[in-house]
Amino acid sequence: MGFLILLLLTCVTSSINDSFMGKAPHSLAQKFVDNHITAVNSRHTQETPRAADTSHTPESLQGSKLQLDSEIVLYSKIVLYPEILQPPESAPDPESFRNPESFRNPESFRNPESFRNPESFRNPEFTRNPEYSTVYEITVSAGAFDRTGTIISFPFPDKLSSGIYRMTDSNDKKVMVQVDEHNTGWFILNQLEAGTSETYLLKPDNQPEKNVPNGPDLKVFLEIDDQTLTIQTDERPILSYYHNDNKPPESLDDHYRRGGYIHPVYTPSGTVVTNHLDPGYAHHSGIWSAWTNTELEGRNPDFWNVHLETGRVDIDTMYASWEGNVHAGFRSRNRFIDLSGDKPVTALNEEWQVRVFQPFSEPQIHLFDIRITQSVNTGRPLKLPEYHYGGVGLRGHIDWNDPDNCTWLTSGGLGRDGHATRARWVHLGGRSNGDLAGIAVLGHPDNYRFPQPMRIHPDMPFFNFAPTQLGDMVIEPGSPLISRYRFVSYDGTPDPGLLDRLWNDYAWPPGVTVTEYRRQNSEDRTQNSELRRQDSEFRR
Image (cartoon, rainbow, N blue to C red; front, side):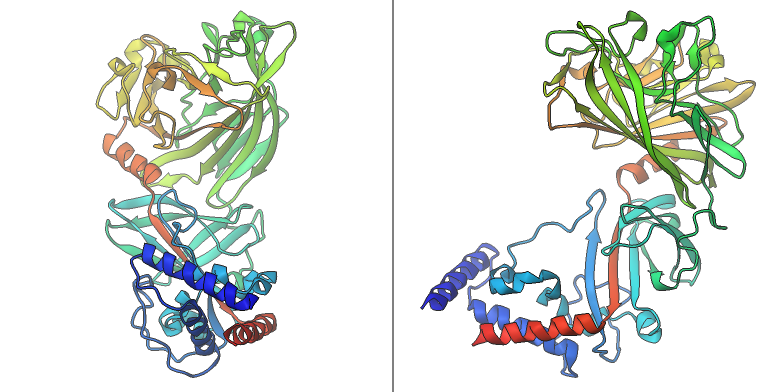
């Protein structure tokens, strides 16, 4: 009796779901059990599978005429779109009404929809090479933009060991991919025209280089001393980060002793484009982060102007670093210390994630990303009243203190008069020790109040995106503020077309599809046998 009631409820639920999706309601048992048994049988017998549903099948596999191999299964498939790391949500899955006993090992069940025609998902390379137990097919779609030297990232459906892997493109050309500890793959896409795609094959079971941290494919690496971490390539530095306190000259007091910032930043030729501990603006520290006008529990600490002694930002720890063939980087923590009360209080905890990519040869640029996450520490909100500067700052080279030797350009085509306007990117440059060079900052569209207004100093080479120009802000407990920027350094004059293209790649990266093919092992067969048994019981 109880089983009949349960079956009636699940059928009603199925009808409701189908009506919601615009489908004709029908029996859940027929829809679910029959489809699933057919799917299982098509994987383990030589029965002819259903007509192919190729609406989501990679182009390279559509129309394949391969013999069905019961030992090869499509294990999982992830479709990625720009800035989406999981497949979009779909309607409720009828499998959710399965016998509760089945949830003891949900990994043993496959979505029946993916087996409408197993032949359409077969990978010829996998079929011809039985020594590979797993093969990943990675398809990159350019989307609306031409792509050149584009950074590609995507998660793998299964855990891979961190390291360097080799994959091949459609012309059998080798491409290096770096897998990080978060199971994300990274590589540089050479060139891809708008509206086209490229497919790569990765065989992780035959990768002798994958766990060699200092192997021949290492292109970006670290040098660490007691003060700084320097990221470099081919004996030439890209940038340095103060993981410990700096050492101000005797002319400056200890207010300016701090760490947790980037300086110097170099161009491909080795020209320096940042500055710190400038006698006139010693609180400007290369690339750094601070808020100016704040309110915390009735107090008003200023974390930017440290000489006022109401607040400061201190390095806490650099807790992770890595190097590789695509990028090197680090993660660190800073503390925003409120000095305006009776005793010091940590107002904000700040985490930096910096990823420095291998230098680009055409065009010659250095490129790195900074992601900053700020969380309140006291359980009370930190208020950020309207103000004309504050956030992530950039101080240009000391030679650019001369306004006649300092150039500005925004994505809106403005120069120094771009102050308080909103832009996608901004260039700051000039002659540094006689060499013409520049650095650009690209804002990410996920940033709060994007496109953010800019603080461009009327005389000094100082810049920051300043969202508080548009009004009050608040960092609430449990709601971190995340800021993302891409920095580009180069020799010579700025190229607006190049900066637009780099911003498009940053804001709207290519789409990526990852399909995994896995050869069944004995455990899979045992699970599938149990699956058929449970389906038979449910059918009765």
